[in-house]
Amino acid sequence: QCLKDTCSNILNDILDWITTGDQYILRLTGPAGCGKSAIAQTIAKTCQENFILGASFFFFHGSACHCTVERLVPSIVHQLVVRAPQRHSMERAKIGTIIEEDQSILHKPLQVQFDKLLRLIFTSESTDDGPKGHPHPSHSHC
Image (cartoon, rainbow, N blue to C red; front, side, top):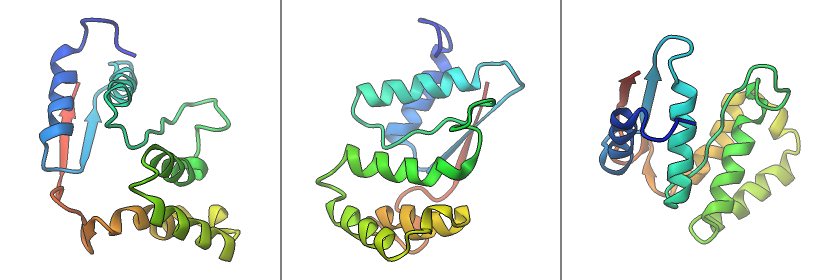
């Protein structure tokens, strides 16, 4: 995570984007070692402390659990339904049914997992084109 009182400007910019932004993807770019992971982890922790974190997943080299995409969708889906159980109770039931009907879903290609599990959580709040109010990616550079 970022050390106290470091990266303040970019952290504030990202937190402003989270609370008022009109875009659903923020791409954080910069050279290796500039602090992208520290910024992302600090933002996730801040959002969790403020009860606005939906889910987070970080890829770490050398970690059997966090260096491949195999756990990405299941992890995100789990976090979303656990953190907002009342909001996602219907989706939780649907996800349970999908997994019961197709027990191999978690071993299928990422796009299939995304379409059948993760997209389900957002379709009740979105149009067919994606989440409302967030049409284009944003970009931040460190």
